Length: 217
Image (cartoon, rainbow, N blue to C red; front, side):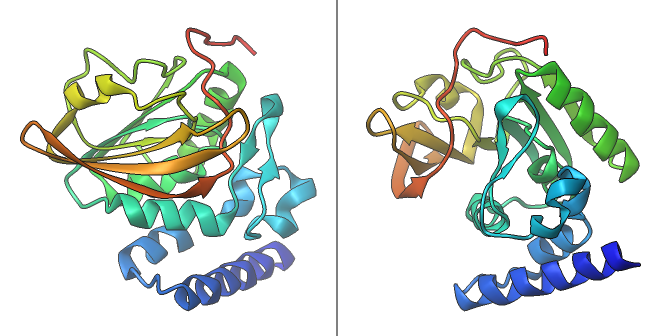
């Protein structure tokens, strides 16, 4: 009972903060409400599940703060019927919300432990339209056709050009790009035909991509 109350209070506080920033997408907020964040963190951090701060998860990785996660999902503008590629499954929270918004989600993660944990969480929520794969994501996901939306949670050293072939016309890419050794910014690319519109958005605390590595831990 206490955990359910904490979940409800945490979500309500998150909604208030997001609305103060002008974010009020009802479909997105409903998807977040249906995806209990406390399920995606260790019990030690359950009370902070809806915090704006990053939360440590397994394998030395982290779960982005609730505010940033929802803000990025809002920028991605996922619509029903779309096919989404996520690079960096992490805890699986964003994956789960994407699954409630899109028709199909393919999410790749280099850590076997994170893939297994995320799969169990998705199964417990009854989400069957997600495929998880263990891979490093340094080349996106070639050979799997094109996607309406691509979201990366690992920062690339420069704009990854291979994504141009993995997006449909009218598709959108949200990807962190390193601007120096310690900082990265989130960039949004919208594809129209063979042309791209680039928007440099804001700094984000994502870790650099580790290319060609899929770790068995």
